[in-house]
Image (cartoon, rainbow over all chains, first blue to last red):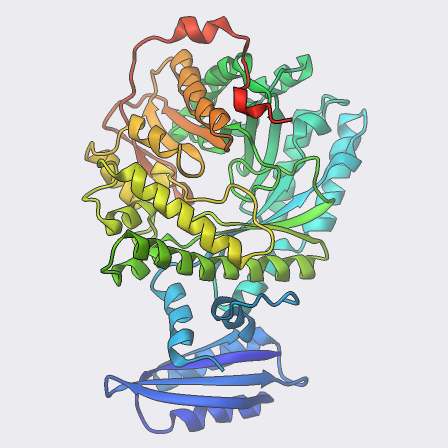
Length: 96
Length: 449
């Protein structure tokens, strides 16, 4: 199952390390990653991930990431990739 | 991989612009529940709905969590109860069962306490219509609709006359709740069989055994997109189209996903821009963003026509089956911009009626003084229904003569139904017209064969 993890917040040390560590612990594989700093202080990281077979349920992953976000002071979301496919691709995925 | 901007655009639409899917509505056919015994019919209905829709709320919440877009309501629409109960005459038994099911499953609304009497009424259908006030005032989540006209059949003025009194009775029986029952009753012309929106949803006879129809929302998203447009009205229309495309795609995704998980067929996406009373989720504010000082001003009908057309053009490309009511909604009590304009005397009933000629769906959630006569309400219904019949479109009336309240007061319904200022209405007497009864013949252009 493919999903997009987005991390938004004030830039600080170790965000990538902590988020990717948490994903590793839950058996979620990072396939692609991009990161930008907006207006010199806002950190935005987008990760394309594959939720592997042994991973916990989606809602568990989501709540773990939310908790981590609260701990390190950034907003972390995970959404199925299909929502972005739907909105930003003209071709309609009939398997949706 | 998508660009950061695309990802953030989607996230912002939800977190700052109120993008949501208004409803997943599961249509369930009750034809196979018909018996000649009220009790057995009700029991079969209970079993079927629990089987088909028992997981609806959980599945809706799961999908919402996974894609990160709120799904505000989960609803059920059933075969018109007047058809299901015609043999057993068990409509009151059935409505108790439907209310119980709605409660147990945890859905927000259940629609289909409905009758289709656009040409004529059987004696039983008359009895059924007269039961609507009791049905709506003794249940919480049940919605009712009555189709009194089609472009093919003309307008059944006997039914229109009856509905004026029924609306008044609904208002009286829920007089301690600002006549709330009227908010759950819609009078239609050209009612559609796959509408996911309440209060007018029912499942038509040409539909599958169980089918998912989804209604999208997102006026706030359109408003924010238009804030960036400096150009002319062609550009305005283009931006609305592009935005409607994206909003509708969310609905398409949810409809397919919900149908798969429920193991039922996927019906349609309804392209409607449905407002909520929350600030930043208003259709009126889109018209104001296009360039009106207030909704209700001269130019309102033209801007609404542009909006409605662009929403359809963008939405139709985004979904493989479009249906329901599909267009911009203008329910007064559910739209912060409409409420404000009505309070300030800038939006009249007559202007609202003109607006319904170019959008979906009709005189919707409009509160009028409680002492207005049933004949005036019937005539108001007849006017709105005539617009639908002559223009071959769906129109509807959901009007609330708020018991004990007068012009300038406010009626409060709560939740998605919002609050409405009591609007003035022309009191000139149309009784002679209404009491003539009979049928207004179908318009010439409906004879296309």
